[in-house]
Amino acid sequence: MKHKFPDNFLWGVAYSSHQVEGNNINNDWWEWEKKGKTKEESGWSCDSWNRYPVDHKLAQDLGCNAFRLSLEWSRIEPVEGRFSNEAIEHYGKVLKDLKKRGMKRCVTLWHWTSPLWFTSNYGWHKKESVDLFVRYCKKVVEELGDEIDIFISLNEPRLPLNRGYLLGQFPPGVRNPFLFKKARKHMIETQKECYKTVKKTKKEITCCLNEYYSPFYFSSKLERINFITKKIENFFNWKVMDEVAEFQDVIGIDYYRSFEVNLFLPSLKDKSQDGKFNDLLWGIWPEGIHKALAEIWDRYHKPIYIFENGLADKDDKYRAAFIKDHLKWLHRSISEGVDVRGYFHWSLIDNFEWLYGFEPRFGLCEMDYKTMQRKPRPSFYEYQKIIKNNGL
Ligand code: BGC
Image (cartoon, rainbow, N blue to C red; front, side):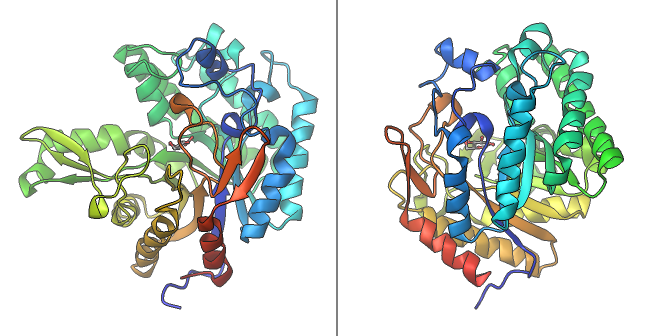
C-alpha cells in the first residue's frame, strides 16, 4: 500500500439539512426559493428527514467511521424562544442511529439556513443575532451533546456573507458593505460564544468553525509580496479563521478549487489539471488541497479536518480519480507532518445545490427524485475500497 493513512483517520461523507431533508418550509432559503431566486425549489429534496436510515446504511456500507450532517435551526426553534421537542427527539434518533452503525457524529449547527422569525425580525447584521444563536447552541448541547463527537458551529461563513450581503445572490439578498461587516463581526462573535458554551457544558466535544478555503496561485513573485495579494487572501481565506483561531479545538476546511491570479492583467481563473472541469465548470486541481493544508498548518498548527471535498459530476466521469488524486496529495501533507485527522466527501447523495437547484450532481449515489431511490455510482465502490484499506 503506497499511501497508508493513520489508524484513527476519519473517513466520512457529508450533507446538510436544507439540502437533503425536504419540506423545510420555515427558513429563509425556502422563502428565497419561493421568490424565484433559485433555479428550482428544494421541495421534498431527498426526503432524508424520513429516509435517514437509508442514507446511514449507505454510509455504513461504504465503511465510513464518520458522518457529517447539520441540524435545521428552523425545525428546532420554529418560533423565537420556543424549542420543538419533536425535532430534538428526531435528531436524537438520527444521531443514535449513526452511533449504532459505528460512525462518529459530526454535527453542524448552521449550514446557511435560518428560521424565518430570525431573518424577518433580526438577521446576522443585527447584534441580537449572537445571543439568539448562542441560545440555540446551548439548547442543542444540553439536549443532544451526548450524541455529538465533533461540533461545527457555523459552516463557511464567508460564502453566505459575500453572497448574501455583497452580491445579493443569497438571502438576505442585499448589497451593502456596511451590513456585511456587521454580519461578519456577529458571526465571529457567535463562534467565540458557541465555543465557550460548548466547553462549559460538554468539554469533551471537539468544537470548531468550518471555512471554505481556496488557495491562490499568483503569477509572479512580485505579486506574492504585493499588498493587494495580502488583502485578497485575507478577505477570502483568513479573516474569519484568524479571528476565531483561539476559539476552536481543530480547524475545519472545505476544499473544492484553486485560483490562478494575475494582478497585472488583471485576471482570475480556476486552476485545472489537464484541462479538467466539473459540471459547474470549476477546475479540478487536486494539488490545491496540499497547498491549502500547508498554508493552514503553517499559520495555526492545529489538527485539520477536510469536512468537504467533492465535485458536480453527473456521469461520474472524474469522481473516482478526483477522490484518489486529492487523497494522494492529502497523504503527502500527512507525511510532511501536517496533522490531518479526517476526510469527508461531499456528498453521499445528490442533493439540492442552492441557487442551481437539483441539476448539479455531487453524490457518490445518484438520486432519482421521483422514486427517492439512491443508487451508488461506480465511484462509491472506489471510495469503499480506499476506506477498507485505510489507504490507496
Ligand atoms: C457548501 C455545500 C455545497 C457545496 C458544493 C459548499 O461550499 O458547504 O452546501 O453544496 O459547497 O457547492
